[in-house]
Image (cartoon, rainbow, N blue to C red; front, side, top):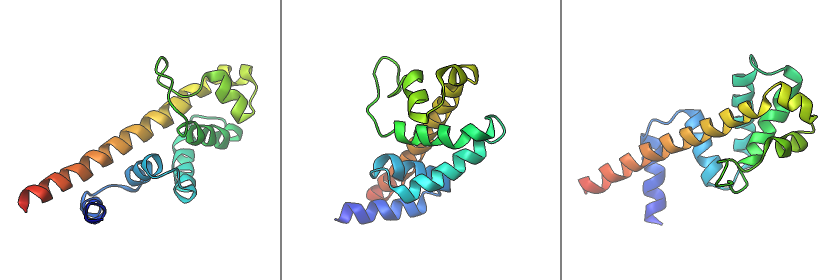
Length: 133
C-alpha cells in the first residue's frame, strides 16, 4: 500500500505532460475508456493535417485497440496491415494507397515513447525519494 502512495506522489512531482500521463496510464492500468477518449482527441489533432479527414477516427481507434493485443515479435506490432484495414473497415487498396499503417505505427511508437518517458521520470522521483530517507 505504501508503494502505491509513493508512486502517486512521485507522479505528481515528475512534471509529466498530459499526453505522457495518459499514455503511461492507458498502457499500464488496463486501457481505461476515459483515458482512451483523451488519447483519441490528442492523436486526432496530431493527424488532422496528414490523413484524409474521413479516416482519422478509424485510424486512431485502430491504434488504440491494437495496443491492447500482444506484440508479434517478428514485426514489432500486434496486427498486420491487412488486419488493421479489416478492423478499421477500410478497403485494403485504400489502406495501402494512403499508407495508413505508417500513421498507426506513429501512434503506437509515440505512445510507447511517452509511456517510457513517464515511467523514467516517475522512477527517478522514487529512487531520489528512497535514497533521501
